[in-house]
Image 1 (cartoon, rainbow, N blue to C red):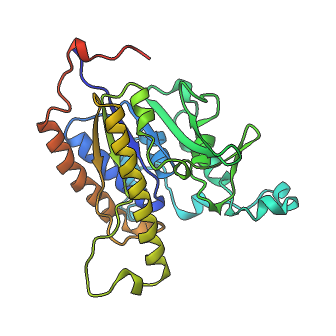
Image 2 (spheres, rainbow, N blue to C red):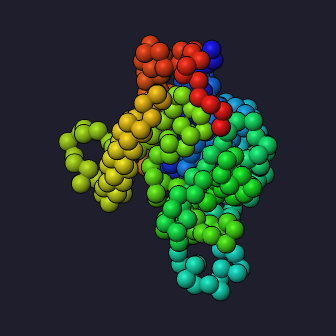
Length: 305
């Protein structure tokens, strides 16, 4: 007899990814502690930090007002992400124009604040997804895949949103945000041995409301809503496929109503955390009542990886 192995899969979403911390807060309150962390972009940052034991209060502290902070932990501000080009990039106009910013600054910051920067030495299973832009395929970093690349470099590659960041070079290959290939990588969590996969998806489109159509709220609102619709549809189809191909695994899809908060609005941190928390608490309580976290019998135990 054993407890089910729980995985946390976090989508990207830039500042909206702060809602992932609310989902994890609900998990902690219900005594649910993931052992496997899979993520792209913002989800990869959460997995690389929380998955190494950096507490929620420490991570949330970085979004509090300066005079209310109690910890000296990570501070993911805008300037943490957007780096200037390297000198060598100035002599490569094609590469220089492939994105507005460099992810090198983010990589250096992660290398400084992560307790361990080696996938092989982390107790939890941390898996990061990216996309090889030339081979047009998903790339996985972590134990069982590419574990030699430092965590900070893998996460930096996973955060390279096309157009915003220049593709990130690792081992002579160039990488972009892992969600370019797949919105979810829940299949990776199952292959890693998960019995329960908690999916934190922040791409839920804004619900109808108010007197004004999204079409009359400006170009950013239209782009945000269009992107959310596209990625939500990809996520829904992926989840339907995973549920069919892995019937013994329990998938819990948590999609908080983020509202109309933009992808760069980190000042809405409190609201984003609470929305993630409330949506997760409701979904996890239902899953518990359905027996998703009950002790598994020997017949259900998977062979070791």
